[in-house]
Length: 457
Picture 1 (cartoon, rainbow, N blue to C red):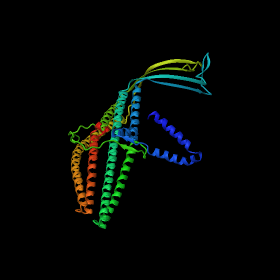
Picture 2 (cartoon, rainbow, N blue to C red; picture 1 turned 120 degrees about the vertical axis):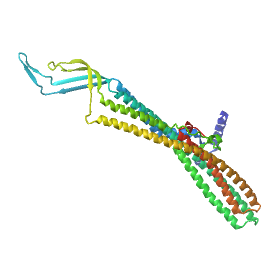
Picture 3 (cartoon, helix red, strand yellow; picture 1 turned 45 degrees about the vertical axis):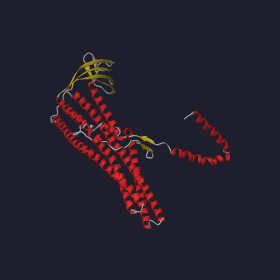
Picture 4 (cartoon, rainbow, N blue to C red; picture 1 turned 135 degrees about the vertical axis):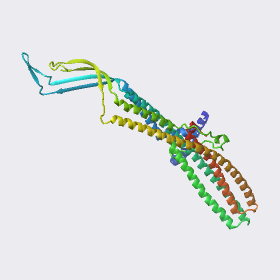
């Protein structure tokens, strides 16, 4: 805004403040408050395209945020599994007191205590895994696949959120279009009602015509209220999906145009790239690594260690002094369950992997059917748009001719109202068919896992 405009505004404010007396200022205060409330209530509307709405829904979806946390948790589990390859350091310190300790009598030396009443000991031990039978490697690979699985699960949740947002966005546009159509119908009926009133004044219409037009007008008023309420509910549902306050004034800017022939052509069979399938592939590979992990229980674990100990009396029980020493060596650990526990756990892992494979096959078959049926529905929706467009053109021409005939006294009011109702119905069907085409198209994009679902129309 230009600076001189601010200056002129300040001058007007100073002049106005001088003109208002101190006694009138208290009278002016309520008016100022009402003015501020009006300015706040007339704040500019938030404009949102379809792609912007999808981005907002993605940011504010609790399920998407939960999936992000799951993905981060899986990555930390993977890092924890990798850390098992590194040495581990253990530190242990202890002290104790015994009121009585045994002693032994040596000839010529006398009695010597075995140990000391006060004991102090500190141990530091470094352990390195040398051979684990594949335990560490299998656990790392399994967690790596879990990271990929959770990443694909996050993508699946984002795609589901985008699909739900598209449906809510398009449903809101449809409800607003239907409400506008009902309002246009109300205006047409009001014009008919006023024309009939003029004809009644001239003696060319009777009281029944007046009552019929008034009844149609009242019924359409109720219909307009119902459609406006449906539009308000659709806007409220969209606001909740977008994470906006319910009273947010949102203006949808996506242009709904009749679809072209190119949009209705779907390649068959459509390639399916859903993240759910990739997630199950990763889970299958993770289950296979868990099988190897259970098999590794048949093998021993070998680790090397080095330690340092400092204490009093330490290992010299007869010398009650501070002492230290170093140790190094190998440790072998081999646990065999005599009840066949390792074998049972391995077989259970086999069955779990088979279950995931069957789940993937079932989902793949379901998505293939969904992709094929949605492709056919897209073609049907396009042909429905063409048909309803022709019907709408016919209904408009029919109403235009009927309106002229009714003014000329060649058509009854009741028949004109019926033709107007046909026009309203055909208009709403035409608008609904256009929006329904994009809804069906969104279903196909979601079925095949297309990246286009994140964009606009």
